Each structure stands twice: as structure tokens, then as C-alpha cells.
Image 1 (spheres, helix red, strand yellow):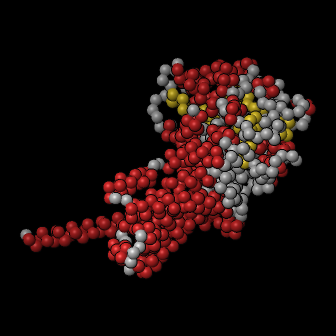
Image 2 (image 1 turned 180 degrees about the horizontal axis):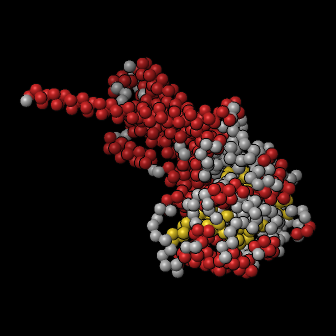
Length: 332
Length: 299
């Protein structure tokens, strides 16, 4: 089954551009592979009662998705980070206005192979030691990460440069968005990363928690210690509770959909987005993410129905340490 | 009337000849156009990156903030997978060619030969998943610390893929060895195995070398198998158990993303393509020279 999913994932990646040629009332969604499971689940439910409206969901990564979004090729863009200045500029140049809607929280998961016995937790500093640009070609063995770890090669798996997860993780861990070492297996398709980590005893990787939930038996989740007592002591594992009470830091983050202002007025898109925000909570939990507070969904609906355009993050891209309460305040 | 017919016919013949000539020119022009595009973009690339860094750097990270343009990890990955493929394909291919040419009855030959050629008709994407989901888990039983993406299983399956190239072309070459050579050897009291390996095989060496080199260029240019099963991790290593990235896999990786036209990332595609082109070009020349040399000896 998992293999079939992997193949389907890769195929969908290849076939995404073809899909947009299909006829009929069509909602074109592309972007983050992190947000993909939610949009896919909502689309599936929505299409049961949509009277023939089709929703096509691609996975080009947040960056890849925004590139298409700002060229007017898609109606909705899945994003695992807020829009960046360069992307906001590109949208502006082609006269595309957008509404930003948060849909869930993700506890970005750090994973190793189940046969890995030495890693019980990692600190943010150790993650930085592994992933920072200076580690490129230098940190190649587990023993270099912490004294006492085995003298075994470390094989890294992570999202590619078009990914919002990549932008967020590098910002949160390395302190600068997109600053990462480059000698790792980079794929926009999270199923490829799952497959890589699950089959490699020296592996370490990171991606949205939903892909861990779907592959629990084949991966080992690593608790993260940010060594700050202000938000919970010791290593913390991403879960419903730790993300909601903001103790899983700095890797908990809101994830979004962006709708073009033009598409927002079309009846079939309107009914899809409203359906999305009203039914997100149970589906978000089902696919493995953390639902927002009900008030957050309400204020998102408010933003949508009043067509409040732009990003509450000021178009600055990934921002670290935004708690659910912060988000709600920003949305209002 | 008769004369007019003759003129028309002559004109027709000329026209057909010209058409055929144009057709043959088409492939020449295509090649020239490819070389032109590769060259012009590659020159653009080397305006920004020094040739020395490109050829001697051991880090390849053009997509990241800390950019390095050393192609050695990619060349290394390509040569490693190709080497493994050749190690698998040459012995198996030659043995099956020898069997088919010297031992098999015509009936068996007519069944087995098309069957091995079917291997060449399997889509490479199927081979890719075959390597990732079947061969890798199988190899893992023997080598427990084998990584999920590795050059060993990708190279192995690539070897299987090029067996028909080696065996079919070698078999043709061995079949073409004059009967007189075999009869002479038998007359001197040789056994069948001596005839096969000491007479026929050396006599067909030109064809066999050409076959092996053709298979090698096929392996160097192979894309899907390595993109799926070898991992996409540019790593300067000769260890077949860890993930690597080949030149072709890199080109696939970067082409799938949205790389803006004219950027340095975009130009790397052509620089890589140029290296790939030069590698297969040199191999083809070597194959051509070898063929000529051996032909002179045996004719």
C-alpha cells in the first residue's frame, strides 16, 4: 500500500501540469506537499457533494506553488509558510491579489530510522550543527553530532529548495531562511523522504508531521529540546498538546492556503473555501496535523467573506515562534 | 513521348535522391544544433564559475545559499553506477552470447534470443522501482547496513537492463566469425570450449568491444533508474552502499522544480549536459578506433 502511495506520489508530481488541461469546472490547487494531505482530504469530501466541481491538487512545494500562483496558473496555493517578499512582488507585478487563510498547525517532525538506538532526543543546537551550511562536507558521521554517538555515516533527507518546510526549518534552526547544507537527499515529495529514512539505518530527516502519522511503524520520531525553560523543559515530542500549548518550539508553525482575490468571487471556489474552513478541524486531525482554535477558523472565514487581502505576516516569509494565540491576534 | 518519360523519370530519381540526402542531413543538423545550444549555455555558465572549480571541486550545491559547483560528486556517482552495471552486464552478456552462438541449437536460439531482447523493452521507470522496491530489500538481507537509496542496486539493475545490448551485439559478432576458423581449430584437436573462448571470442573482439562501449554509454546516460533508486545526494564517494547522485539524476531533479530561465541554476543543466555529452562522445570515438584496429588484424 505504501509503495503504491509512493508511486502515486511520484506520478502525481510528474502529471500535475497535465491535469490543468482537463475540462469542466475545475479548482486548481498547487503548492506545499505539507499542506497537500489536508487539501486532498477536504477536496475528497467536497467533491462528494459538489455537483461535478473537480479539485486538482498538485505538489510543487510552497515556492513552486507560489511561482505558479503569481503567474495566474492556479486558484489556490497551499503554503507551509507565509508568502515571501519576492513572491509578493511577483504577484503584484501580475496584478494578482490574494487572501491568506491559516488552516492548521504543523509540528515539523525530525525523524530517524527505527533501528537507530542512539538518538533519544536532539537539541536545537545539535540540529544546527548537522544542518548549517558550514556542516556541508564536514559533519558526515553521527559521532560528530554528540560525543557517544556511533562512528557511523549520517545520511540526511529533507525537502528541496522549493519547499516551505525547508524555508521554515532553516529559519528556525539555522537562523536564516534557505541557509542549509546542500549535500543531502532533497525532494519536494515527502513520500520519497519517508522511503529514504525508513530504509536507511543511518538516516535523519525532517518533514510535516502528517507524513509521520501515515508511516508510524517505519520511522522514529525524535523529541526536540530547545534548551529554553520558558516553553517547557527538556526534550519535547510534537503532539496535539505540545503544539497547542506552544511547548514544541521552535518547530511548530501555522500552515496556510492562499486564494486569489479574483477566484474568490467565483461561486464554486467560494463554496470550496467555505467548506474547507468549516470542515477543516476534524480532517486536519485525521491526516495528522493540529487543528486551529475554532475562533481562528471563524476569523479566517471572516477574512474570506470580507475579502481582506494580503498577509498578516507582512509578506516577510517564514516567522519562527508564532503560537496559536499569537496567530489569532494577528488574524483579527 | 519516350524521351519525355525518360526526362520525367530522371527528374524523379534526382528528387528522391535529394529528399533522402536531406533526411540524412537532418540528424547531422540536430547534432549540430544540440552542440550549439550546449556550448552557448555552457559558455554562459563558465563566465560565472571558474573551470577549475567546476572540474576539481568536491561539493555540488548550486541550489543552496552556500553555492559550490564542483562536478566531481556527480561524475563520481555516474562512473560508480556505470561501473557496477558493466561489471554485471559484461560477464553475463558475454556468457549468454557465447552460449547462444556456439552451443545453443537454432531452435533454442530462436526462443532465447528474443527473450533476452525483451529486457531492453522494459520501460526504465519500471526498472527504477524494481531496483528500489525489490532489489534493495533483497540486498539488505545480505548487507544489513545498505542504505535505502544506493548505487549498488541501481547499478545492478542498470546492468540487467544493458545485458541485451552486450549479449545481442556480441552474439552477432561471434556468429559472423568465419566457419573456417572454427573448423581449423577443430582440425587441430581443440575442444568446443577452447574453440569458443580461444578462437571465436578473440576473433569477435572488435564487435564485442563496440557492444560493451555502446552499453557503457547507455549506462552513463541512463536517467530514470538512478533518479529513483540511487538517491539524489551529491556525495563524493566510491562506496556503493550509500546514496549518490548522477549527472542525469541531477538534471531531472532541477528540471522538475521551477528553475527560472537564465539563472546560474538553469545554466548548470547545460554544463552538466556538456560533461555527459563529452563522456559519451569520447567513448564512441574509442569504440570506433578499437573497431578499426581489430578489424585490420583479423581481415
